[in-house]
Length: 75
Image (cartoon, rainbow, N blue to C red; front, side):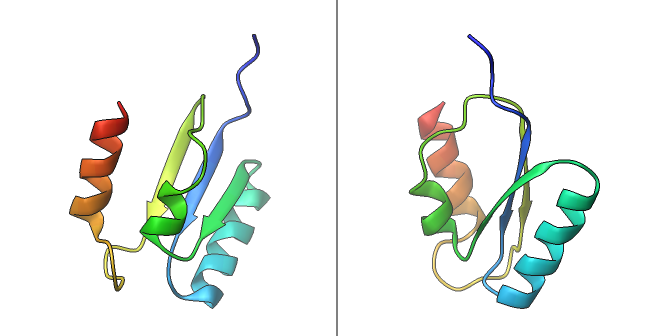
């Protein structure tokens, strides 16, 4: 079974920053999925393949430690 293409996940509550980062990542040839919050990112189905994460660490709501804990539980 083929793995999906590598994707970069962009998580930032600032829409203009999120849009710019997504555009830059696409320019260098990666697929991008952008999210406005950690909760929105965690609500997506798991990605079964290579991935990277660009994360704004100063956002309201769920924080980086929350994300790390949730990802650890997911394996």
